[in-house]
Each structure stands twice: as C-alpha cells, then as structure tokens.
Image (cartoon, rainbow, N blue to C red; front, side, top):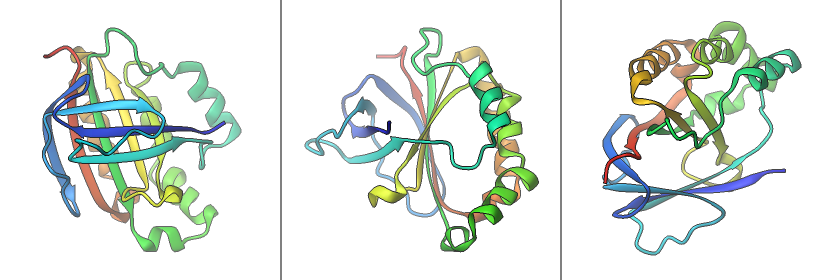
Length: 182
C-alpha cells in the first residue's frame, strides 16, 4: 500500500529549519519550520509544499531488501532529534534510460544501497516518490538521526554525492532540521 506524505514549509511545524542549501537547480524559498504529515496537507499558509508516496523500492534486489529490512531503523525514534529533508530531481537523461540501465548506475556502479547500509541503523530514512504525482521533485527523502550521528550522516551524503548516479541530479535542496529546538 502506498502512503502519501506532505512536507509543508512555512512558519509552523514540529521541525525547526537550521539550514537550507541548494546544491543544484532552483532553490526553495527559505522557511523557519517544516511540518511533516501523512496525507494531503493544505497549501494554506505554506511557503511551499512537497508531496510524495512511500512505495515499493524500485532498484533493490530481493537479497538487498532483506538486508535493509533487517537493519533499518524506523522514522520517529525519540533519540533522532535531527533530520534532513532532501528533495531531488533527476535529469531527463536519467529517465530516458531503461530500468536495467538505471539499476546498473544506481547500484552496480554507484553502490547506493551498499553505501546506505554502512550507516544503518544509526541513520533512518524514508523515501517518498513524487515524480508520478507531478511534483517538482522526483524524490523527497527524509533522514532522521541522533545529534551524535550528524558527522556520520554528512559522510554518507558525501559518499553518495561523489558517485556516478549524482551526475544525473539536476535539482537538489538539502534542508536540515531540529526537532528538539523551539
């Protein structure tokens, strides 16, 4: 079953924005807070809203899925008071590739899943698909972690962004969040 999530940027929400950095493409307007909710949230009072559905994992093999399920932590852990919301859009060139060609770049060349596994269970993640909804980003990934694991999270991102897969990203915004702060 797919579940729709809304990420509403504005002046209210449980997550305080500590940093917004546009890595490529068009920026999102700066906001003070992000509200994350299941379902289709209203645009009213929001500076921006992103939506995505949690769906099947597109490029993982059965073995990789089993390993992920065995070690992946859930979103919403009490100690995970830091988060990163990273919306990305991949280029037309990426989407023009056949599924097996994308899989080869994603995992065989870039080792996306293998890199992520090096940081589990400390870093929790939930991937939201927006492309088929007509959203401005293909994916919105929510990562959560404890403050003690922030350097680990930054290392994971650096490794992922250094891969061949990232050459196909034409829009990316890195939004850092803190749940503990008021």
